[in-house]
Amino acid sequence: MIQPNARSTPRAATASEPSASQQIDARIQSLEDWRGEALSRIRALIHQVDPDVVETWKWRGVPVWEHHGILCTGETYKAAVKLTFAKGASLPDPNGLFNASLEGNTRRAIDLHEGDTINATAFKALIRAAMALNRAARTAAPAPRGKAPRRSA
Image (tube, rainbow, N blue to C red; front, side):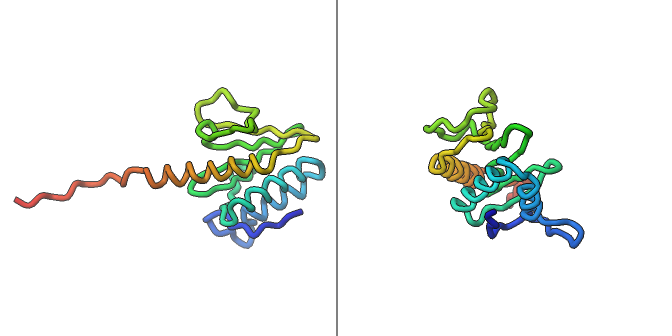
């Protein structure tokens, strides 16, 4: 299994609470079948694109990869590994990787099933596009609203 040098959740883990990266490691190890291998491979591809990606653990057990916002999640189900891109509907997908959650206005997902392979080049392009979209949204965000400065008479 690949052990990326990942940054973890911004909240520091305590001695009794493992970091998000450690929780993701544990999830991958607990999946003693193709799902653990698939999640490990996806994680490695994300880290190849963005070595500074922040790994978080949300919603009571979902691995999340973030860079200026959520890039994607890695949910595991009995028959699938679901990679949900938070802003997937706004991402170019010329290779047609998105095959789930296609009806929504915001998210898109890739469902991987046993025996599936993912086009690594196309997946990395999706991660890069998600990073760019998050970065653009961050720079385009309006300044916080506060009181207007007083004018001198």
